[in-house]
Amino acid sequence: MNVEGRESRVEVKTSPLLVVVSAPSGGGKTTLCQQLLAVNPNVIRAVTCTTRPPREGERDGVDYYFLDAATFLKRVQAGNFLEHATVYGNSYGTLKSEVVGKLRQGKDVVLNIDVQGAAAIRAKAEEDAELRAALITVFLTPPSLAILEKRLRKRGADSETGIQKRLSVARQEIVQWRNFDYLLISTTIAEDLRRMQCILEAEKMRQCRAVPLEL
Image (cartoon, rainbow, N blue to C red):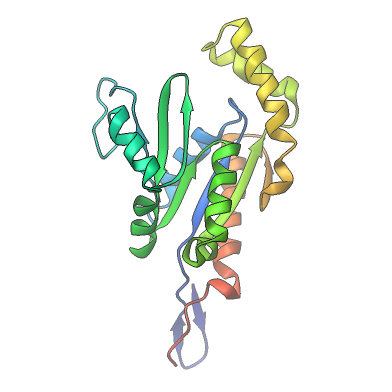
């Protein structure tokens, strides 16, 4: 951000952000994060760890850090993860070193995680001043469960039982929106991205994130 006067121009630096985006399954968080990464070169994703096998075309250290179950467990026991969970038999986790390392490079880091993962990161941030200063949380949700159900059916990835299970979990997640800094009601991809960019711009303007100036 630049502050311009008649005789001088001052460059105002701001500290980086850790942007946690959560949503119900089918809520659009993956698309939103992909769009944000595509248009903002200073925003990067944290590469997460998983025990699932690599899919065709996936690269270790780029798409995921692929770990065996024993190594993942050692990481858990050592307290290396900001958050971790097991989903459908595979474990996933976000390394603190991955996030902090990128923040210290001056990059804004975006994390696409579920509500439980967001809660774990909030708890970690309470104990860590560096994370606490960087963290903002955004909950993205469709305007109604009916629209969410329509999206789940349209993508055709789940059975009827699977859809109903996801909707049941979504009901439990949506009521937790008050735990987040921002609530973003999803409309269109373009509008969701515009409002997400507004959130980041507003956060950058907060006085608490300004790096002291040398005038």
